[in-house]
Amino acid sequence: MTDRYCVFGHPVGHSRSPQIHAAFAEQSGEAITYTAIEAPLDDFAGAWRAFVAAGGCGANVTVPFKEDAFRLCDTLSARARRAGAVNTLILGDNGQTYGDTTDGVGLVRDLAQHGVNLAGARILVLGAGGAVRGVLEPLLTAQPASLLVANRTAEKAVSLAADFSDLGAIRGGGFEAVEGPFEVVINGTSASLAGDLPPLPDDLFAATATAYDMMYGAEPTVFLRWALERGARPIDGLGMLVEQAAEAFFQWRHKRPDTAPVLASLRASL
Ligand code: ATR
Image 1 (cartoon, rainbow, N blue to C red):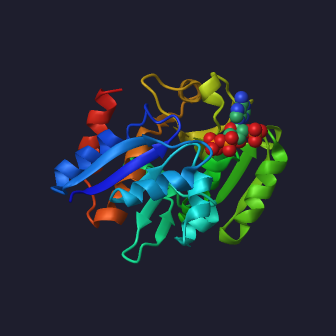
Image 2: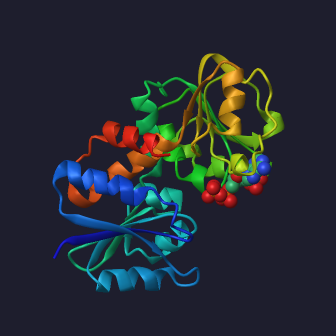
């Protein structure tokens, strides 16, 4: 039987993951199916068990189930334990469920693909929710000079930074505490969904700076438009989406997809 994979979400109709994984499978000659499944909000574990009973061997997990997925796993990768969230489920030969998170690796790889050097950089991360928690470990592992987490609710940023302080020079605070310049500014808030922009100083960016939005869309986000006007190079999160998918595909199939053509065709289809 063909190995079955899926993405769980709620809603999930908008997910690009089936398109991305179909492209990876075609490229690598792997015979798999990959579908989108809307799991019930109150029984994610039941949805995973039913998928496994029907021959499923792995899944991606998106909003709002990443913490539910974390809780149901028998074993976890170190980075998933840090993140407190799982976006990739793998069914082991022993029937146990292993959980990993590939979001942070996806972000760091996409930045690398764009030639952005994190080592020695001053990094600002906006937001302190689940999306940001998921990417801090790989960002710190890249050895930036400093990493400031700034959030509307300052205490959340302070406590998040404390959780990662063993990994490098990380601090947390409110937006009013932000003092540039930064070489890399990453927006991990959901503010752009509402068309909002965190209140930020005008002199945020170093002379050569990258502004990265973990969101993406057919049009640049409010944050990326604002950053472009201030001289930063804007990059949206579509590449992160493809790279996190590639890492999940690698975990399942032990083959590394060539992400560039997949990203190009996804971009064209937005
Ligand atoms: P996610 O899983 O996307 O990280 P989350 O855990 O709900 O979702 O976190 C959302 C993040 O976006 C938080 O950092 C939130 O700030 P608060 O902690 O102060 O709530 C931030 N956020 C959402 N809307 C925002 C807005 N309009 N302006 C600034 N920050 C916003």
